Image 1 (cartoon, rainbow, N blue to C red):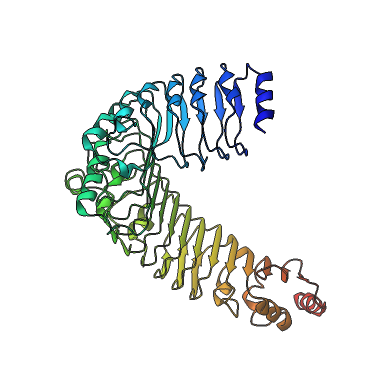
Image 2: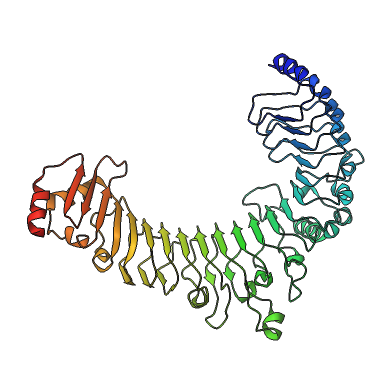
Length: 497
């Protein structure tokens, strides 16, 4: 294959773009060094194992994509002769260190997957080499737990990079390790991240795998919101040691917030909206003024969310997802009173949650795997309600007629009684085969039929959809798959007459 590629490349010596993404190529042939006009080279998601040092001969190269080359473990020093590079990605590779020379790539706009040297070695690139890269707009740092020198971290000079918009800090993930690091190491990792303070221009920020006891001080912006005034997207993932969220409500343009794997967080209180000083002296400030979407997931100890009725916040929130938070027993009163733009609410595996109530604007409600959920009520504007594996749900009330309801539970032996009190236009039920056969055999007028006969269209299906039944109210029809005896349909038609 290398010979074939070499011949092709020799035939097109003035190539400017080469895209080998997802290819089986394991190495670049020597003929690549002759492509002196090449501007774009993408070998991402390929079997590439090595890069030739002669890659430095591609003097005009501006784009080099090596992301997801999982067999790639070495960076040749020749790569730092590519002085016109604007994009360089090592995301999801096996590279653990970079040779010295990164500081020479002063035209870089996007640097993704850089692993800084831990010991400030002369032959390797570290955080200090970021100091000269003034054009960066996207920066992703991997294995940041290797960085252990605060002075070196300050030399990265992130705070002065006025073009930087997308910043990602990734630490080497080792789930369940919150107690495995000595306190000195946690303090050091906190100090390094504090030294990597982003510029005001930042719009997207990710912190993943961080094991400090608290999030960086520059997230505690206080009343001076100029520090992160353009931040729109914040993602905090697998940060297992911090127990309290900072006052993120003070971020004036935060649009999307995702918190995942914060296993030490037990309570989210008023400090999430405002810090104490701001609460006392600037009570008129509206927390989360631009927030549209929140996802809280895999927080096994989170049991309490305090947000009082008298504290307005999140007026533009449209989407809220709570997933795998088994100890959360209730939603805050402030959510129903002040999140008046909320349209989508998804709650998954909140094992202690008992009710979802008083949400005036919610159109789409999804509740999955909530074994103690008993009540859904006072939703005046629903369009779609999806319920899966909520076996103790007994009450659905004060719901206006809506478009569609989906119920999925392979354990239920009868249809839920609450169907009698609601008016969806369409009902879709996934259940065990035995229940479908029971509904069919009992026929029109039975207790099971009375639960859904007022609904315009009903579809009931088994797990593998080998058995299904479709009911239409007007004109009456009832069809089954596989086809069952027609007595039910005739009986139903007569009763309708």
